[in-house]
Length: 428
Image (tube, rainbow, N blue to C red; front, side, top):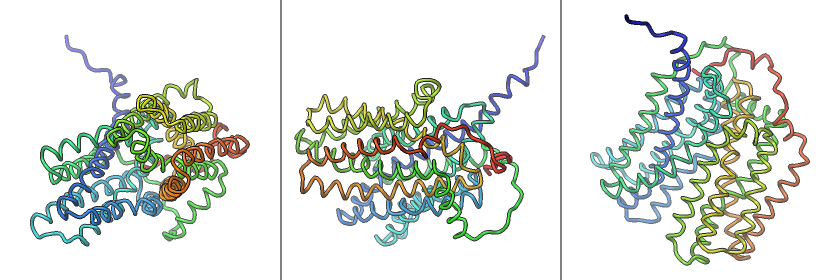
């Protein structure tokens, strides 16, 4: 006797498939970004033999991060998150794949290479915000808590860097940087295809009045200004990125050279921090049910732990203690992005998510170079110990001020659905 499968039993798996595919695409794209970080400088250095041109390539590859997210956010709201994700990864994959192909056939002058690297980052940057704008409807359709979905999603860049960068280095060592760039291109193209063919189109929204590109950008800015909790979180992220983004590229390298006495320790410290961040990001989902259920206290508490650990760095301990401290710092940082993105997905109207995510991401990116510059001056003129103490104390001051912020208290306020939130969400 043969039985038939129960359709009700198969339905949950079918409803979860689009969310799973979205997460797989995000991990593939994050892996591609990690491979880019490794292969681009090695490729340019091998091609030109010039440290100056390699530095210019890194500059061209990273400069669009400051503004591409804001403008890409408008495009996400105009064409839809699903379509923007597909186009973004597709174009990024084609550009990366064309670089070694053109160089080996027609030749690729350095100015053209810099332009292609610049264009690659311009088209690739909106993909993360585009996929993030799709998380909420797909998580709801899958019956998955938004906190869990955001934890899985936000872990991708951290895991991509920790796992992808060493694998890319091994690939380059075995097969060369050209092979690494083709693998990089393939990861973006596969991510694009997954979203295109496995994430369904959502019902189209009724067409609204035609609004210009500039007007749409200012609408996103207006929402950030008029929604206190979003504005407060954006300001908080700007200050913390200013303080935090100087630590890995500047203070840790100086620490390993001046205190630990060798540059090899830097890799171990970065690995410890990355592993801690991955663990913290994945753990936030289950922990958010009880232990970390208060989002505001989770945000401030995690930064309080980071501040305390950074102040312990002032004692300049040896490598074993520093490994433990950097791991714990990463662990404390893990829940931060899932907390912030969950609040934003709940409160930002669906038709403005692309702009708001793009703008807030651009603000955060803009703080990084300023923080690195300030940290460089502090280390140069005050010394490493004083610089680390000043940055650690700045964390403490920020947390004390934030405890009095009424806007941040809205992170845990009930969400009252408005007319926009009640519409069927579109992630096409």
